[in-house]
Each structure stands twice: as C-alpha cells, then as structure tokens.
Amino acid sequence: MASRQELQALAVAKERLVREGELYRLSTLRSKHEVINALQPQALLHGAVDQAIGTLQSRLGAFIGQGGGLSGISFKTVLPYAVTLGSWIARKRLWKPAAAAGVLAAVGAWWLMRRRPDA
Image (cartoon, rainbow, N blue to C red):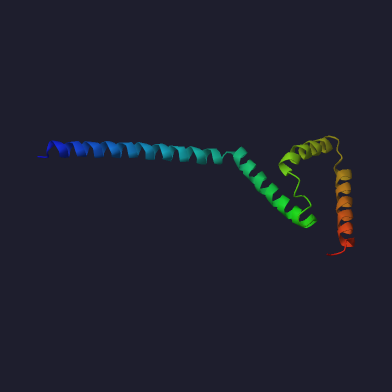
C-alpha cells in the first residue's frame, strides 16, 4: 500500500497530466482551425495576390531604375484603381485600344531606356 503522501503526489501528477492534455488538445484544435481558415479560397487568393504583388514590385522596381523606379509606389494602394479601370475598359469593350496603348507605352519605355546613357 502506498502512503498518503505518495497518493497525494500521484494525484498532483495526474492533475498536471490532465491539464497538459487539455492544453495539447486546445492547441491542436487551434492549429486545425488555422489550417482550415488558411485553405479558404479567399485566403489562398489573398496570399497569391500578395506574392504576385511582391514579385512584380521587386522585378519592375529593379527593371525601371536602380533604387528608384517603382520603389515608392504601393501596388496594394494602386490595385483597386487598376481593377476599377479594367472593369470600365471591359464594360466599354475597349480592350483593343487599351492593349494598343499598352504596347505603345512599352515600346516608348523601351526606346527611352535604350537612349539613356549607361552610367
């Protein structure tokens, strides 16, 4: 037979194990809900847009100018305006003129960059 102190120590250890198990269960449940929320289509789209914006900003910023260029532009701020403009262009069926203007702007930027003397 175990003494009274040993039984108390076992009860304390059992209570501690029960509390640790509850904490583990709650942390597992929280992790499960975080994964479920992260796999929602809206969260996936948000992550993909953030990744694309970061890549676009770094590539275009380095392409247009060293240290300058688009480094001062926040694409997250400009994106709603761009979506609104794209929606307007789609409603008015102005895709061909908009594409032509984009091609002309790209050719003009290429021509200006070619003319700029290398430092």
